[in-house]
Image (cartoon, one colour):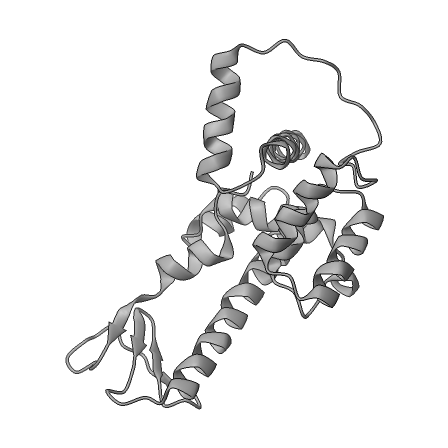
Amino acid sequence: MLPHSSEEVSRRSLLPAQRTGKGNPHVRNARTDNGILTTRVGLMIPNLLAFDRWERAGHQIFRIVDSSAWCLGDWLLYGQEQYADRYRQAVEAAGLDYQTLRNYAWVARKFELDRRRHGLSFQHHAEVAALPAQEQDQWLTRAEQARWSRNQLRNQIRESRKLGGDHKVDNAALPRLNVEQERIERWRKAARISDTAFEHWVLTALDSAATQELEEAAG
């Protein structure tokens, strides 16, 4: 599953802007080209900051947060492949959330470096990660050309499925399952909370569970 987006990570990492860092032992400064100081616990923003500089800082922060999801995903994939018996220890020592990292790694595994679109966010890629590679590329190309947001891409995929388009999640049909209504409603609620289409939520949940079982079996 993908319950933790890179946007959620940014909200957790950036505390409300601080006007001064005097007497704060946690402040380790790095000044941006916009006159904003970045610290371990948040931003120190000048009292008078022009709108264009404030806006530019937002783009810079987003790029950092977005690339961090890819980097953390790649980092975990390398650890899983090279240090199968020890990578969990490194994750715990770093104080990182393993479930979130696994979600990042799941998307990173679906897209080799040369297939990642620089003009699109990590979350754009996450939206199509459950699709076959050819359909991933088709949707990402459309999103680039139309400059769709993540939500616009999601809506376009939903509409395509409603209209019976060619973009199906998989060419193989899953077996019909008899599931209690209570369980289905629980799954639907989880999908709504994560702001994910129900079908996509189910697929990513299955993929995530399969990845975990395979990792534990390999380890």
